[in-house]
Length: 186
Length: 366
Image (cartoon, rainbow over all chains, first blue to last red; front, side, top):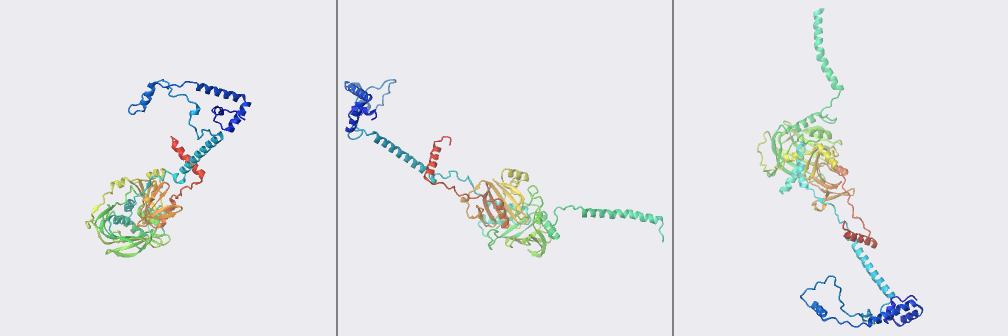
């Protein structure tokens, strides 16, 4: 069996189930390193329990209550001041249980959960990228440069004028253009 | 009877006088025969010299004769080749050596300037354009507006009549004109129904005169040096078109270049503009697919076509057989219409494009 590592705390806090607790105890009979770790954990826990409760001062309580009241801005934090202790040291038993019964999930389950969350996140990312890369959203954003619309009527008039240099040509296009501009029928 | 030395001396003196008189013209004649000095424009093998002379007189008549009158003009569409013609009665007034005013419906007048040496690019005169492209011959006589005329025909190499002109016998002015395509399809016809030769008096109410003509137009004229420079800058500016159409005038029209071509009878104007055609704003045009490209057409008359070629918008106004325009399209082919690139629609390809797009958002240098 591997070393207990972080399960040392669970063993000391009696948060292992029956089978795990048995396996941990069996391991302690063989492993002096883990046995020492458990002893150190228990000593530390007992030392913390033996500390007296610290009662907050009345000033601190009033200041805290004043912070909750509306109106005044928060007082500026004094430079270099260390945060004052506001609560008693609490042992791990006082932490809210992560799940009903206060049992911590096994490592394999947690690993699987982390993997599942990672896979879901990756899948969502891929779907998002695929949506952004759909053909409708990646069409050429630069259409044909400014399109030219030739002034054909003006060009027709200029064509007719250019025929003035020719003795055997009729400027018929000029007359057509004028008829059109005048709205008169031919 | 014998001749004495005096008689011999007189005879010798006559010979000395006569010989140079005879020999010099013979030598000049020999030079003229064996050393061919080309004339300004030789008459073609198929040309009738009298017809050529009449045409030259007619081309010069505008500088010597003033006239005014009423004329009808009809045109047909070379593009649609429908039997329907478009016609009008116009008032014409010309001052000798000056401009020609043409009024339609006594309302609006257009002014046509004559040929100026500064703007003429074709080298030879307009009559020579006609003689280069056609064979001319006499085709009888007739009467137009009560005046006797000689009829001159210009024929193509295939024998088809390109134009028939009724030239006033007194002044050589062209009083009636008919032009045809290769297959005999009429392109235009005009004739004076009434004409007054002499001082261009106030025969007609010419209404509002188009004054946007004259100095500005002359200032916009281009010369060969300008055309060479434009070609270096990527403009097409062809020097000739098919069927003997020669560039005779070029000028700037706004941002466009107008190139005027003629064979003395037919005319084509080619307008070039930088850029690409925006077909969505063209109204009343039909489309014709040419070698994968699109040409937008209006049958007219006159036939008008526009397309994009080589980064330029080409617009053609043609009073000429369609073969000429078709060969122009062949030489300046329309840009091929490329379908939008087909994208890989696979899942991974889309992911790649999406990643590139997100990357472009995050790239501050993009």
